[in-house]
Length: 309
Image (cartoon, rainbow, N blue to C red; front, side, top):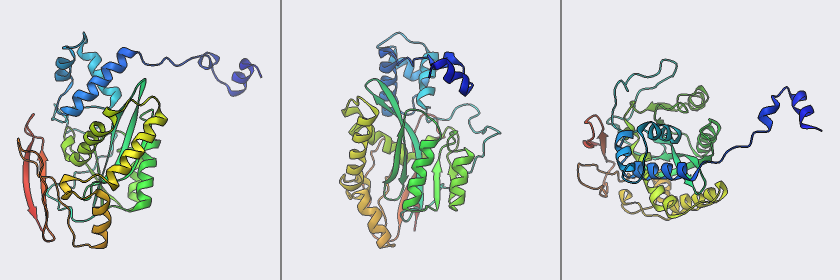
């Protein structure tokens, strides 16, 4: 059947059927790659500081950096002007984790999206993480930032277990009625980071850094299929084989399964202090030591120690 007839039967504009997508240029791919590397190493950098780094290598203006960061879903973690004012059309939920003792698997989950580079393009990765054990319950890749891949990842995680609280940022995916209704139907309490406070979701942010330095940056994925295969192998390794310093060098799977079998067991939680790397903390009783990062201090990352039993 001629294309003209097909377009007429479907009431489509024929010009759109002849359009051939234009692949991103090598220059755009390189710029996005460098932005991703700079942001992963220094997530407190905004477009101005990333621009300074990029101008050491190329000629570029701030508007281009801002456009690329927007397409990549990146924003500096430091507070900005008026960031505490949510969009009126969004349903925003309070942050429920301030001073909370995370004492068991499936007590608190975190969900977030990050940018994954390919040799000739990019993908977006979403993952659901159990904060107590650092166990990745589900993940999904997509070539766009559309809603379905987020819903798919959350639905698969809910087939494994149901958390008491699920925490996210205030991005459009996580304020969507489709996402919120799914959690509320499962009777999950919804927690959202304060705007401009990505450190409220610190464990998921640290997962992205680990995934990128240990897997993504070591490989040049040629296709979405190759990226999916590489990440599938890595997450299997991460959950089942990789010893985690904050878990006293146990694997996330060991802690996730063992803690459910023995409810009094507790997980080690990173202790964040200014200028000091995280260290392993082994609990000897039903006690968890939680350090909640405080990003209200400008560009400094401080910590509020909270000892709970």
